[in-house]
Figure 1 (cartoon, rainbow, N blue to C red):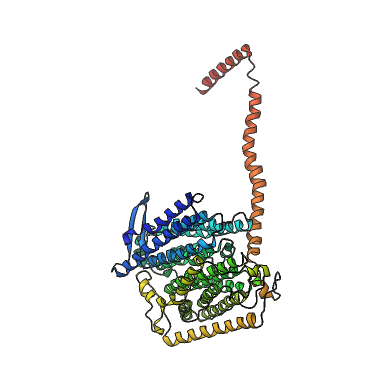
Figure 2 (figure 1 turned 180 degrees about the vertical axis):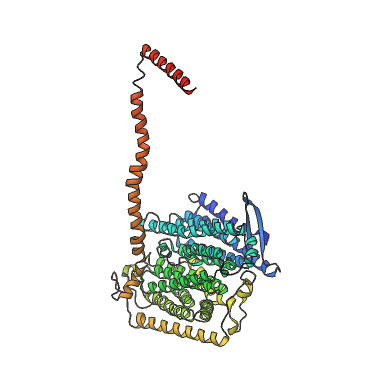
Length: 630
């Protein structure tokens, strides 16, 4: 089965081709069936690969397909790496991806671009699988760029809306900034190691000592790439705007798969990052800052998808915090649990939006618990999971990261725990504003509210179950488990951060759970008992709340410091350098040739006597030149 791994990305690619070519001729039923079936087949193959790898004593297999690029000393094969890390990513991408495809059949059924949408989804899955399967950095980079392209296409799917089209361009441009860092890092890797293949890089890296300046620069450049793709400060503002795309896009790209590509890349390159402790510290600081800033912004947002978007940014910050303190297992554990509960939360939000005829403002919701019972129950499970209450999945992964952070730095732990409390508050604020109290929309809209069809609710139920029980793969020894995930990833993650003793771990869990319960209580008191509803079209009055509501003015700051100066510079270059100098030189040559030809053409008078006279002058000139040169 492992030797058939090439079929895993190939089959979704075939789905893209079929649905892409037949988008106007095939029925929506056929398109939905093809688009979902190809992902299900890939999931089945991935599942077989996972079980075969588990029974195999050799935990790493490189599947060579063909020589791709060969130029001088550069040899890049198209080959796939099947190991514990990539096998888990295959299951996440195809498993969650299949559920989202099924959900999309119901959500996008009335859209005219149904076939195009499914072809884009299939193409995205193909590139994401290429990213995680690549046995070298170049194949990974091709997948990396491919998912960036697909995110642009999917975010701007409703491109006739200029705001949505602008959001797609913003995502594309900001990702290119990070991608440049990644590409420069790959160039430096080839210069340093003479190869871009993992199998040739890791043995050399294992013999190096920490603190190497070149390795630190490589790690920094790779981290810049990860910042762009995984929406970390300062390259995070594209992700909230990316909510312009259809909700299944938000769930697939911006919750479960693409935004975790940066975490995957760093986890895959853990040997390099362990050699750059300074860069690891930078990663931890950036991750922590991102987690807190995004959590504060989420406190005052009124668009249900924007709350989830900033929640995603915040949770990605926690993953980077884990990577920065060396807790690679904990960070990847959170990748898995986050894929479950955040995909669930986005799809639940889509179910609410679908029921309310595309209403996304929570100020116009409320009282939906009885009208949307399945959506409410599944969203409640997802909210509890992300808040970090036991025994739901988010509790185990979040607390593992916090435990390692506590051992690394007590101040960082305190800040991270505070962020976890904010998470519980803003997530339950979202839940209460959406489902509690009375409906705040129009009476006409209230009469049409209905639960989503089964094609949408069944994926919600499956993801809710996974969100509830997904933590079993990483139950710590302090709670009687053996942390299956840590043992599974041992062949890939060579170094693991030290965990605190059991007594300390119990104390940390207690602090986290008590704080989360208090945060939920505060949210309940404010939004249920006091029935506090944010005033429509009015910003909060306090300074901090106003900063949060306006997202700390990051977009305005970038606009003032980056866009406007670039506009001025480009305007100057256009008017002066391009029009006056460059065009002036080019046009000057043309003018000179024209004017010269005007004078020279007068010589061609047609007078034979004049021509004979000029021939004589020419002969005499040649004779004089010959005589004088002797």
